Amino acid sequence: MCRVGLLATEAVRRGCLFTDIPRGARIIISVLGLDLAGYVGVMRRGQFDLPALIAESGLLCGRCGICACARRHAMRYRKLVADVSTGAVFEQVPILRVLFCSGKTASLMPAVLWRGRFVVDSVVETVVHVLRDGTEAAYDWTWAGGTGEAVVSRRTLGRWCDLVRTRLIGSALVWLGPRLSIVWSSTADTASQLESFLDQLTEPVLVGFRAATGRAVLDKPTPKRDPPRSRARRILGRHDSISSPNPPSEWQRRGAWSRSRPRDPPAAVIPEDES
Figure 1 (cartoon, rainbow, N blue to C red):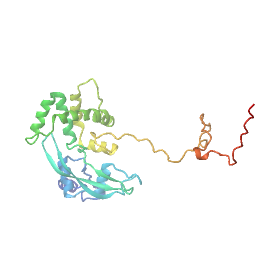
Figure 2: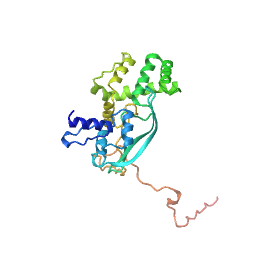
Figure 3: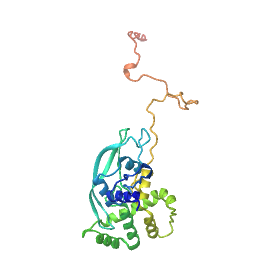
Figure 4: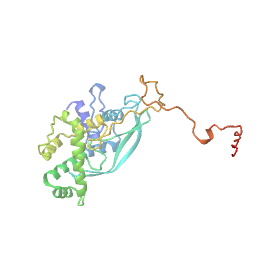
């Protein structure tokens, strides 16, 4: 094996992003696109290249528009992350946070994580079992894949089905479908389509989706916000060429104190002579 190949193999074993070879022959190894076991091993050893890690995440600064200004801010830890398919449990999963020159911070999330405490692919695989075999059979399957105790409840299985239907199929597939050449059919079997879709839902694809959208495939889509309205007071007739059909009424003073009162004494009333 050539020297470049040997160094690349050693870099994979050590979990480094860059090998110690000339710049033109450097090999970039994805860290956020690794499985959770590989990601945790690299992050705990601290053998990663921060600029390459930020570039892989796709995060950009809101002030300068690039990621070169980002610097290490803190290391957060996810308390517990589980894999329903294999029964693997990861504790204290490290997540690096960076600070941009705009003052905002962001997390460099691995591909398989979302806001839940189970990896993305195992959630989708569990939903396939629910749709194909039923809730009770899927519940027994998660029990067998766990560590001898109930991993998820029946209520959680129903909630996962709703998440996959609304967030993955209803939202994330708009971005994933053209890139994976997937055409979803509402009349075909959902379980079979999800199973074939799961084969293509690899870690690099999940990294690309997060880099493009800023969220995981199972996270709630961020609603589009309207641009902020100006707080400046609007002056009638300043920007409108046509006057308002309901012009404001003339300014009038209000209150009894503003009423005009005569200062002279009232005129005497002369009674008429009685006949």
